[in-house]
Image 1 (cartoon, helix red, strand yellow):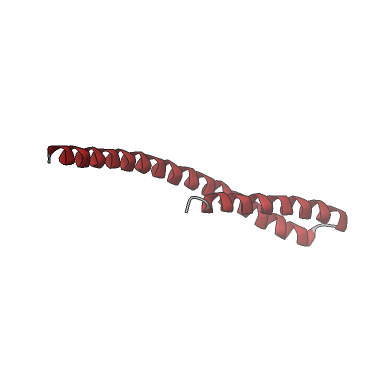
Image 2 (cartoon, helix red, strand yellow):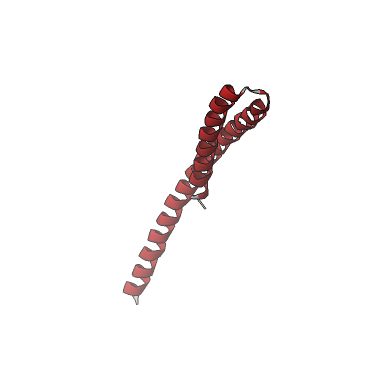
Length: 87
């Protein structure tokens, strides 16, 4: 019986260690996702400004602004996908 008790205690200790390591990784992932979220929020504000800018831009300028807005939008979408992978 003593051998079984030792194996179970060892298993419990191993599981506790795994739990603690995962808890740390989860906290780090939350922090990383939060930082990424803040950056993406700021970029989204820039994208909204570019969208408004398109309305008053000339045809040539609107193509430049539109291209920049498209790139920014793709960057934001990729960032959202990166955050979503954490879930």
